Length: 413
Ligand code: DHB
Image (tube, rainbow, N blue to C red; front, side, top):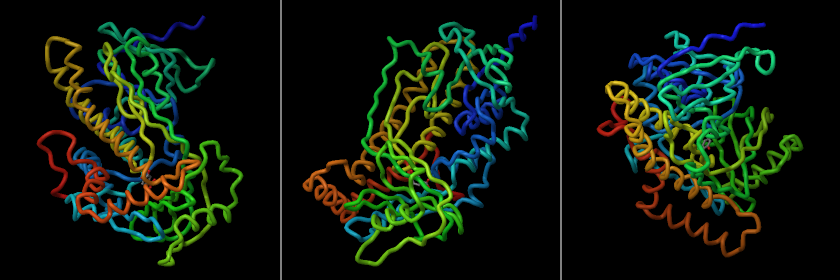
């Protein structure tokens, strides 16, 4: 009979090694707080998942301050976006209106920077480590059971115990599911549309991102490199991306951006297609016993405005601040951990509102009446015609400033 693996101990067990988990790990490392990260996927599998590409200035300064400044050299700073409706584009001067900007730097690059840094510092990150059970969150020694790289029945089951357990394990979070039903409140909103996302091999069609709405629905013209672009268009949540030829994708995109100004997208081969479902969700509380939730494990937003990754990074900056204070104190008062939820909640709900508002303003509701379509266009027209309206959008898009009090995100950038 195999001998059971010994129980390991650490101070913080982080379940989930995406950007939120790895950033928290890096911050704890710099504070000298012992921890272990368990991630069910391999590093390569995470890298190959295409995700959103926009970072707020505060996310950029979080990464740069932590020594990961490749974003400043290789990311593209965007000082504006275009809103396009009735076949015409209207520029929103993000920088002129707020003094801030956003960076086009895909989430996979953020992940690479964090994973490289973890490897350099020798942080204990275990890939292909699947958590099977969350243990004893009501005690002062919570933990997890997990299986190693072999996975499934072949893997060795192990146990990790800690002082604090953090769930950064994404929207299907195992940790979230261990919140007892009688304390968990889950606020959810579903949308009757999704995004069809493609990567195309083509040059940029416009200098800045274009968010467009037309009688055929929404489209977003984003970017990646000089040779590859990221484009999205509104579709049915049950759409099968495999059924779409390149010609059909381009026809759909071109008719959504078409206008009197003759704007057209530069075409090329479609290299990747996928459907991204929309969901707004917030779970409360984000602390129960010795377990805390951050990032997509705690909340998800629809993709319009690209708030998801930014919110996740903002969460862990605050969580790290709270944990360092908590570990520095002698008494282990769990209520002190509630500081985390109190401090992140306002940003989370603002981002919920912003993402839902942008989504509703720019997407065609299936079966939308002529009245509703014209009302949405009037909303967009009122917004772009008013400096206050443009600033309201720009403040939300750039993320309402710094995450920690007393910090500014300007300066070096
Ligand atoms: C991208 C995604 C978004 O959701 C968005 O609002 C802007 C850009 C992107 O993947 O490039």
